[in-house]
Amino acid sequence: MGLLENIKGGIEVIQKSDNLDLVKQMMAIQTDAWTMSEENRVLKEENNILKEKLKIKEKLIYKDNSYWMEEKGNVPEPYCSRCWDKNQNAVHLHLCGNPAFATCPSCKVQVQIDPDYKEPKITIPNSKSKWSSY
Ligand SMILES: [Zn+2]
Image (cartoon, rainbow, N blue to C red; front, side, top):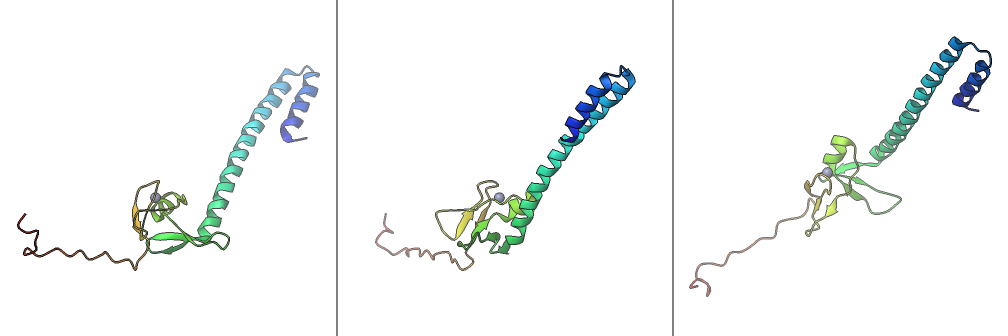
């Protein structure tokens, strides 16, 4: 039996004694135990979330304006550094049309994840081209 069940059993025994003050005291203890049990459940949940974030933090490597994490031997994937640094949310970056850039679906920041990428040179035709008369 757990704490709450034990208290409930104790209240049932005390109720037979016709001691109203004792019953009230035991019911107050039951309420406190219920509150503590709920707080304990919430703390366990928060603890599990923090443990998971700690595991992620140990795997993240900052490189090329984003965090990278390798999962089970797969190719490392980029995560948003803004979302991680601000809220410890590991958000996958999504590749844009240009594979050198990625966007965070959460905060919408755009990151150049390939440092070797060079903008293509655009040559402007000179004014003496055959199109200049138009
Ligand atoms: Zn983000």
